[in-house]
Length: 85
View 1 (cartoon, rainbow, N blue to C red):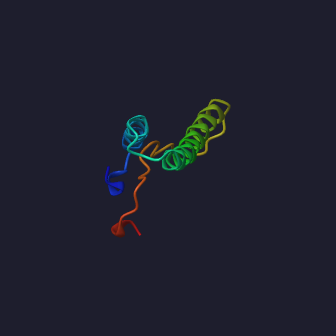
View 2 (cartoon, rainbow, N blue to C red):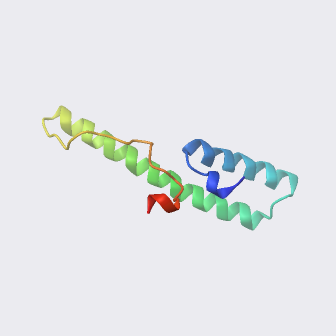
């Protein structure tokens, strides 16, 4: 997979599956698979933090505290292109 095509969580899941297949077939060294897995864990942790923040905002709103609109959940780009700066 082309790393610049990594823009969505679906792309990240595809890399995980491709990694598993490459490890099973012997096309990828285990150390490379472990490095990919570690990076995917960090990405997953980041997504979980975003979800937890939204849950907290929703619960707080139910109690009368308003942190503002919840926008952009899951829309954060994973890739960084020159025009994004």
